[in-house]
Length: 302
Ligand SMILES: *[C@@H]1O[C@H](CO)[C@@H](O)[C@H](O)[C@H]1NC(C)=O
Image (cartoon, rainbow, N blue to C red; front, side, top):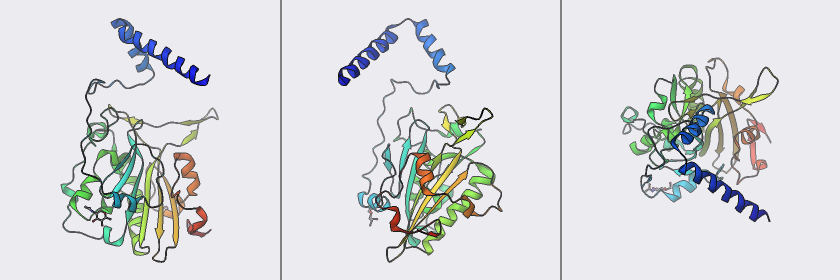
């Protein structure tokens, strides 16, 4: 019965789409106008007829991916693996859902053979053009192209650092006071954890959090930039797990608002229970491990 209803729905949908395509020019224009009124972007650079063949990337290193993702994938939406990090892409917001990295002291140490200044921000051709963000989206927006997987975490070779410059690894971030300051300090803190732990696993991503408005109701409101309407997250999170040589695990979870943050605010004040990020993001972090396997969460014994 349910299957039959579903079939009918598809059939009816098919008819209306069919009549739309067969309709007159003015009818179509009315529909476009309606979509525009709802704020649906009309892309002039890409049409549905544009053929899409994702760039063929070299075989990703399965053993490296399983090393990075050892304790579970937070979600499985459009997963894309690079040589030294893995990301899940949110096509609707044109920003990743999450980016996963595995850091060791060896991987983050200074390397004079890699040159960050040679890296260019570039569109990720593996993302369908409908959902891809472009440099032009960021231009004049007032936001930085903020790395999710930090460039400084991938210094083993030039190709690794260059891959962090794909726009699929970027999100619009407030520059001065956030990307270049408080957020950068958090990234440095995570790198320093490699001095304490043998393995550091780091998951980073955006949040779009609700705010109560004057009518007393909660709304999720965020800016979108450029012709591709790239979402400007309200907040960013990092969930970090340190693993000691003898297999002890400790977790820290941070949320920072995408705004100018006073440099005197200590990092610890951005710590939140990891569950609160999971609920807000719709993701489960380090899901292969029960939470009671962690000896500490946010510095507190569990
Ligand atoms: C693949 O990953 C493993 C594990 O990190 C590493 O030892 C190996 O060198 C990598 N191979 C290539 C071709 O990068």
